[in-house]
Image (tube, rainbow, N blue to C red; front, side):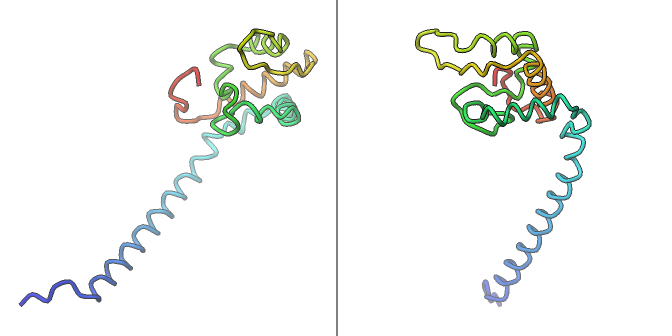
Length: 141
Protein backbone atom coordinates (compact mmCIF):
# COMPACT_ATOMS: atom_id res chain seq x y z
CA UNK A 1 0.00 0.00 0.00
CA UNK A 2 1.43 3.36 -1.08
CA UNK A 3 1.08 6.20 1.39
CA UNK A 4 2.48 8.90 -0.91
CA UNK A 5 4.60 11.81 0.14
CA UNK A 6 3.87 12.70 3.75
CA UNK A 7 4.59 15.87 5.67
CA UNK A 8 7.00 13.91 7.88
CA UNK A 9 9.01 12.91 4.78
CA UNK A 10 9.06 16.50 3.56
CA UNK A 11 10.24 17.68 6.98
CA UNK A 12 13.03 15.08 7.02
CA UNK A 13 14.18 16.09 3.53
CA UNK A 14 14.14 19.76 4.52
CA UNK A 15 16.12 19.28 7.75
CA UNK A 16 18.50 16.77 6.18
CA UNK A 17 19.15 19.01 3.18
CA UNK A 18 19.63 22.05 5.40
CA UNK A 19 22.13 20.22 7.60
CA UNK A 20 24.00 18.89 4.56
CA UNK A 21 24.37 22.33 2.98
CA UNK A 22 25.32 24.03 6.26
CA UNK A 23 28.10 21.46 6.72
CA UNK A 24 29.19 21.84 3.09
CA UNK A 25 29.31 25.63 3.52
CA UNK A 26 31.41 25.25 6.70
CA UNK A 27 33.88 22.96 4.90
CA UNK A 28 34.21 25.44 2.02
CA UNK A 29 34.85 28.31 4.45
CA UNK A 30 37.48 26.28 6.30
CA UNK A 31 39.22 25.32 3.05
CA UNK A 32 39.25 28.92 1.83
CA UNK A 33 40.60 30.23 5.14
CA UNK A 34 43.42 27.67 5.02
CA UNK A 35 44.46 28.75 1.51
CA UNK A 36 44.46 32.53 2.06
CA UNK A 37 48.00 32.82 3.51
CA UNK A 38 49.61 31.05 0.55
CA UNK A 39 47.62 33.07 -1.99
CA UNK A 40 47.87 36.53 -0.42
CA UNK A 41 51.55 37.25 -1.10
CA UNK A 42 51.74 38.80 2.40
CA UNK A 43 55.34 37.65 2.84
CA UNK A 44 56.42 40.02 0.05
CA UNK A 45 55.07 43.18 1.72
CA UNK A 46 57.92 45.65 2.17
CA UNK A 47 58.00 49.25 3.39
CA UNK A 48 58.03 50.37 -0.26
CA UNK A 49 54.85 48.37 -0.92
CA UNK A 50 53.20 50.00 2.10
CA UNK A 51 54.22 53.48 0.89
CA UNK A 52 52.96 52.65 -2.61
CA UNK A 53 49.61 51.54 -1.20
CA UNK A 54 49.41 54.81 0.70
CA UNK A 55 49.95 56.72 -2.55
CA UNK A 56 47.31 54.53 -4.24
CA UNK A 57 44.82 55.36 -1.50
CA UNK A 58 45.55 59.07 -1.07
CA UNK A 59 45.38 59.74 -4.83
CA UNK A 60 42.09 57.77 -5.02
CA UNK A 61 43.35 55.60 -7.86
CA UNK A 62 40.58 53.10 -7.16
CA UNK A 63 38.08 55.82 -8.06
CA UNK A 64 38.96 55.17 -11.73
CA UNK A 65 40.95 51.91 -11.85
CA UNK A 66 40.17 48.41 -10.67
CA UNK A 67 42.70 46.46 -8.68
CA UNK A 68 42.17 42.70 -8.49
CA UNK A 69 38.58 43.23 -9.56
CA UNK A 70 37.71 45.90 -6.98
CA UNK A 71 37.11 49.54 -7.80
CA UNK A 72 35.75 51.59 -10.66
CA UNK A 73 35.66 50.50 -14.28
CA UNK A 74 36.50 53.88 -15.79
CA UNK A 75 40.18 53.02 -16.38
CA UNK A 76 42.12 49.75 -16.89
CA UNK A 77 42.55 46.95 -14.36
CA UNK A 78 45.96 47.32 -12.70
CA UNK A 79 46.31 44.00 -10.88
CA UNK A 80 48.56 42.64 -13.61
CA UNK A 81 49.89 45.88 -15.15
CA UNK A 82 53.39 45.11 -13.87
CA UNK A 83 53.50 41.91 -15.91
CA UNK A 84 51.83 43.55 -18.93
CA UNK A 85 53.93 46.70 -19.16
CA UNK A 86 56.88 46.60 -16.74
CA UNK A 87 58.18 49.15 -14.24
CA UNK A 88 59.70 51.69 -16.62
CA UNK A 89 56.55 51.93 -18.71
CA UNK A 90 54.42 52.45 -15.59
CA UNK A 91 56.63 55.29 -14.37
CA UNK A 92 56.76 56.95 -17.79
CA UNK A 93 52.98 56.63 -18.23
CA UNK A 94 52.21 58.24 -14.88
CA UNK A 95 54.68 61.07 -15.56
CA UNK A 96 53.26 61.73 -19.05
CA UNK A 97 49.69 62.33 -17.89
CA UNK A 98 47.52 63.90 -19.10
CA UNK A 99 48.47 62.97 -22.65
CA UNK A 100 46.14 65.44 -24.34
CA UNK A 101 45.12 62.80 -26.90
CA UNK A 102 41.71 63.76 -28.26
CA UNK A 103 38.85 61.39 -27.53
CA UNK A 104 40.72 59.56 -24.76
CA UNK A 105 40.09 59.55 -21.05
CA UNK A 106 42.76 61.53 -19.29
CA UNK A 107 44.51 60.55 -16.08
CA UNK A 108 45.46 63.53 -13.91
CA UNK A 109 49.09 64.33 -13.28
CA UNK A 110 49.79 63.71 -9.61
CA UNK A 111 53.31 65.20 -9.80
CA UNK A 112 54.81 62.20 -8.03
CA UNK A 113 58.50 62.24 -7.18
CA UNK A 114 60.81 59.51 -8.47
CA UNK A 115 60.77 57.89 -5.02
CA UNK A 116 56.96 57.90 -4.99
CA UNK A 117 56.88 56.41 -8.48
CA UNK A 118 59.25 53.67 -7.32
CA UNK A 119 56.97 52.95 -4.36
CA UNK A 120 53.89 52.88 -6.59
CA UNK A 121 55.62 50.43 -8.92
CA UNK A 122 56.57 48.24 -5.94
CA UNK A 123 52.93 48.22 -4.84
CA UNK A 124 51.76 47.25 -8.33
CA UNK A 125 54.48 44.59 -8.50
CA UNK A 126 53.23 43.18 -5.20
CA UNK A 127 49.62 43.08 -6.42
CA UNK A 128 50.84 41.27 -9.52
CA UNK A 129 52.21 38.56 -7.20
CA UNK A 130 48.88 37.86 -5.50
CA UNK A 131 47.55 34.47 -6.61
CA UNK A 132 44.24 35.33 -8.26
CA UNK A 133 43.96 31.86 -9.81
CA UNK A 134 44.46 33.32 -13.29
CA UNK A 135 41.97 36.15 -12.98
CA UNK A 136 41.48 38.12 -15.13
CA UNK A 137 41.68 35.48 -17.84
CA UNK A 138 42.80 38.05 -20.39
CA UNK A 139 46.30 39.46 -19.73
CA UNK A 140 45.10 42.90 -20.86
CA UNK A 141 42.65 42.97 -17.96
